[in-house]
Length: 401
Ligand code: CTP
Image (cartoon, rainbow, N blue to C red; front, side, top):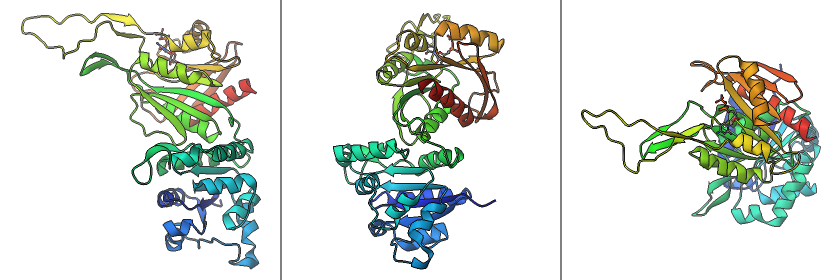
């Protein structure tokens, strides 16, 4: 089988050096990558680096190898084009259909999915011109990955940072996996995903927690980015790296998670509660570390109920038509308990999976049934958590349409 053909377009920003790492991951995972740098990109990383890492000459201008008509061929033959980094100038050119070098010509001839990973200073990203260009590209079906927040060139920090190459690679991989005609079917949508497990503190060093790794929620966030959504990920105590393109809010307790989810849900089209939220928290928080005393039995730990975020979201929709999805981890009577929970929580979909000591928690795979109030059951066979995530988004997209 032919290797999938990827065009890596590189425009002129300092993050070009991080695109080398993306290129390396793409080639090592069996993709045939052609690098098309702009002339400015070559000020940051030279032609020799791109050729050596991709195994192909890196061509910039339409005037090289004219007999091969590269300005048309490269775009036509690609299975995916990823522009990383995409500068404000490149986004403007792409949005307006300008074609004054090989990369911009390639963008006009590509019929495959196109991913842009913008990187620039916060002011340039927030500029109305840039935002309108991004909106135009998204409306036409391109995936524009939101930049990360963090250290920028020089001493500045803010939004505009190039995502971690490993995480950007995951987005590219997801878009490719969805196939050549995969449309950004969540474009223009804002989705909120909660992930991980809350920790309810007893004292400054101890907490009540659970074994959720956050992998299913992170897979949901990543797949939603690859389908074009604006994603807010509310993450409770997960060790996983921030997914590229998602706005990540880190929380600790159920109360903090509730606040962050409700805030983000105000303008969301869908909310997926994949987090394991503690139902109870210690009634009292000891300001100092609880000490053992010789000859004394420990004090019992009194618990109080935490708010049920899923039930609250379902009962009190922030917007008409908002789709609310819950998860249920059950150890026995999985379907019957799932049906009862769906009715009790009042959500639109409930993803039910069986858990146990060695099942689901921390694993890369999952198996589930998605229940809906009309009685339908969508079984999802054992497979990667991303496959389950895509089924959830298929069902959500169907309800939003
Ligand atoms: N959930 C929530 N707030 C809570 C507890 C749970 O929003 N305080 C959400 C979870 O994110 C998940 C769903 O509710 O989407 C199911 O949680 P689960 O703990 O399995 O259900 P419970 O209502 O606690 O039912 P039970 O304890 O009887 O299994």
